[in-house]
Length: 254
Image (cartoon, rainbow, N blue to C red; front, side):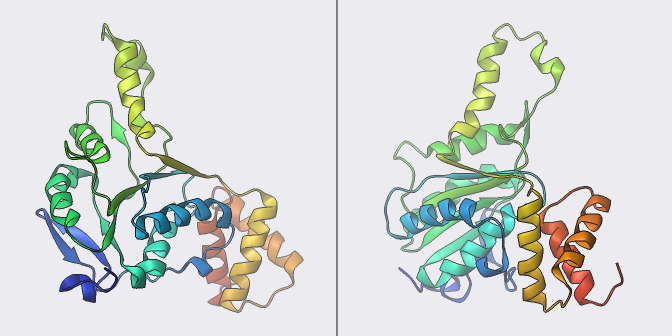
C-alpha cells in the first residue's frame, strides 16, 4: 500500500499513452519548501491529499487562479512529498480524457493512491472532452474509486470559454445549457483560488527565494528591482519572482 509493485515501486509519476500508464523517469523535483507565499492555499490541498492517503473520502480538487501563481507546481510538489506514503501522480492531457474511465477501473484495484492531474483545463462550449470529464468526476454506476482523486488546474473559474454570442445564440433552452456548462466546476468538491500576489506577499516570496538561491542583496534594493522586473514581465507572480532571482543568482545585471 505504500511501496507498490512493479513500475509503481520504481516510479511515482506517470503519463498516459494509448490508454496505458507510462512512467516518467525524470519528474519535476519540485518540493513544497521551495514554493513560498501560498502555504495557506496549499494547506487545503494537502489536507485533502492526506484524507485520500488515509482511505477517507477525498474530494476532487480544482486549483484555479492567475497564471504563474504555482498551481501546477503545488500539485507536483505534493506528489513528491507524499510518494513515500503511497501516492502516485498520473498526468492526463485533455484530449486523453475519454481513455480514463478504463484506466480508473484498473487503478481501483491497486493498493496505492492516485491523483489524476489535468493541467491548464478549459473547454469550448461544444467540446467532446467536456462530457468525458463529467463522467470521470461523477464516477461509474458503481461510484468513484476510493483510491483516486482528480486534481485540475485552470485559469478559468467555470472551465468554459464563453463568448457573448453564446448568450444570445439560437438555443431555446439557453439558460439550461449554460447551467450545464457551469455545473462542471461544481463537481470539484474543493476549489482553491490562487490569486496574483499583492506587494507584501510578493516581497515575502522574493526574500524566501533569495535565501534559497543564496542571493546577497539588501532587501530594499531587492524589492525595488524585483518590482521593476515584475512590471516589465506583465505583473507580479511567484513565477516572475523565481525568474528574477534565478537571473540574479546567475550574475545577470538587472
